Image 1 (cartoon, rainbow, N blue to C red):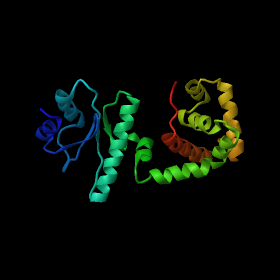
Image 2: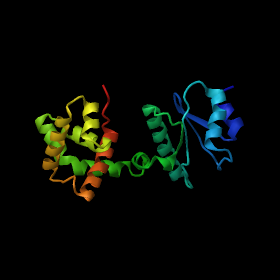
Image 3: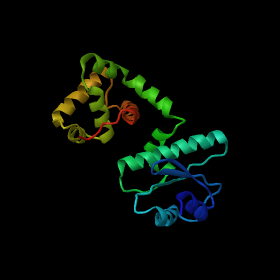
Image 4: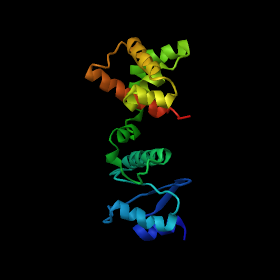
Length: 198
């Protein structure tokens, strides 16, 4: 039985395959079944491959459908990429990730990050350094130690780079408003410039 036929039989709505291992079911109405039960049923047809189910993207107009679809697909791709062991995901449960994956805000968040981090990015270009990457990773991971492990450098190197980045940016991470703004910029920058583990 084809995947498309199985989904149509199970849910009464069509499956749209977007790429290898990634498809979307556009529901006309909410299913009465729990999302995890729907996933379990789908696994009978698609197992043993991993299957991520993202639900909760709502729309009322055709324009909103496009945004909802892009939002859900972005979350599914990220879940697949990170393979964190969560296979049933609700769009709104992703917190900050949901905000960062939202196509309505993506451009604005990228511009916000670019604007806030521009002195640091310019410094890196001019000096061939990696202060932006280190700074953003330290903020996103919550500690110099975690960033050092990811970057394979000494923790003190990360601490120095973070202090130097603060100086270049003219910002103080001890001030809650500045730390929040810089953290959001860091997450948005890392979304477009992911740091790969070696």
